[in-house]
Image (cartoon, rainbow, N blue to C red; front, side, top):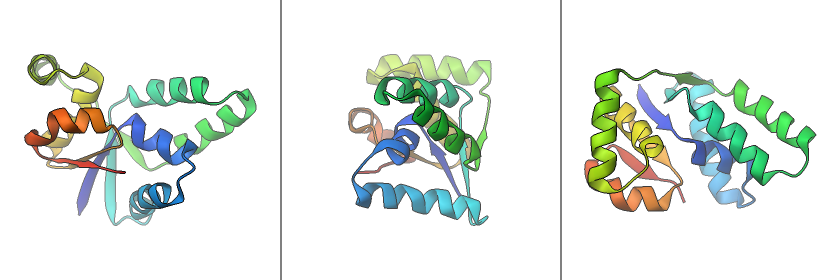
Length: 137
């Protein structure tokens, strides 16, 4: 069964983006997980990142709360990372010049043998050589 790790950029794009072609592409991954055809994973911090993204991209609190409720219904299993994984993440983030946040999603994907799905083109450019990553655009 296919396994994917999603970051906040994918979730926020699905919730806020107006380009139907990109949202449709992302929705296929969510639908596949709902139907039990694949598994979606993320790190626990994704909840904070999504909430913050909604806060600063949505002017209406009620809309933000409704979108956040939709996020909470997604079939995404949140996986905690070990201290040794965080050490690897920190070192790698220095090596490739990325944030610890973005790198943590990628290391989770590599540890699960999954594909990291992101809409973050800057991260993708820096980390594509590591493998296990797909840029959704």
